[in-house]
Amino acid sequence: MTRHFAVLATLGLLAACAIPPQGVSAQNIAEFDAAVASVGCRLMTESDYLPVELQTGLTREQVLDIAKYKLAADQAESLEEGGIVLTTGACA
Image: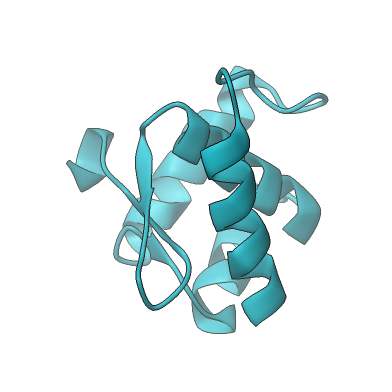
């Protein structure tokens, strides 16, 4: 799991502009936001990712892609201990 967090942080910093992930709809992103809010606005551990995947029907890869998008769009922040926290909507 640590590798996923490092990838999120690195790609979030390297993203020049925020473009939604290919194959992910605006509805998927809204469902992601609601699901992440339901687990405390943070994605850090397996116990955060699994409920988000189950609530949204998204794969782990899609959840990670949306998390990268949220970082690039300044709608999330990387956490020092790994993972991300959403900073908009219900998580603001």
